Image 1 (tube, rainbow, N blue to C red):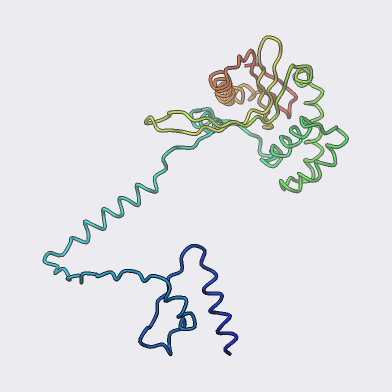
Image 2 (cartoon, rainbow, N blue to C red; image 1 turned 90 degrees about the vertical axis):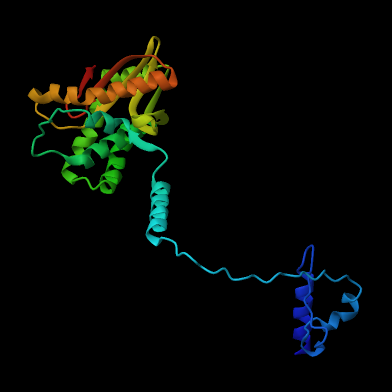
Amino acid sequence: MHAEADRLLYVAVTRAKQLLIVSRYPSKIAIDPWSELENSLNKHFELDEVLIEPVVAERLILAPNVDVELKKWKDWVASAAEPTYLRTNVTGKAKTSSEIKLVRPSGGKGMAFGSVVHRLIEAVGQGKTLEQIAGYAEIIAKEEALDDKWKPDAVAAVTALIESPIWQRGIKAKQKHHEFSFMVGKKEEANKDTLIKGVIDYLFEEEDGWVLVDFKTDTYEDEHEQNFIDYYKPQVLAYVQEWEQTFGMKVKEAGLFFVGKGNYVVL
């Protein structure tokens, strides 16, 4: 019992790194846990006694207007919750400004098909071979919940793209980028700071400038192709503007590659 009390007293004393303040009961040594150290403590100075003036209770003469004060607090909370900047993306800005209505066939392949194709294209751009793509397609098709019947179409679309002239131009280019992501800050609506995010599908540099390509996996009838070109054109041109203004690079050509059709359209 005494050994445990001595151990706790030792721990209490030795844990202090710079200053140890001991509060004692000089008149009640029996309940003073520090009494064992009395000889040592007497050699150290005592802290000055601090006199504290008693606080006089303030009498409330006029009650505050709770509704007014509560409104101030609510206004402050609302102001604090308001973002100091806006967030948007190039695709969203371009699409919301378009009044074109696209006609899509009822038997489309869905958004999952587009996601799988884009991921396969990115994988090829990162060095995967066509032989590896088939196995990789099995994995990402499950991740994107793509219907099994569309997997061969996704691989065929990517194969056709890789064999296309525009892809081959990129291979021979001075430098190229796949899925180039960027985020820039600008003053937009109401002169408010805005973060604009974008992803350029395919970008490569030739001797006389940069070529910017956006891949589209939409399914459509041939007679409706111009509507799709007009619908996506503002998005591609917005990418061109950002690439030239933000990065200071000259774009000599921009286009849309409709993967399902294997058709490259220069804008």
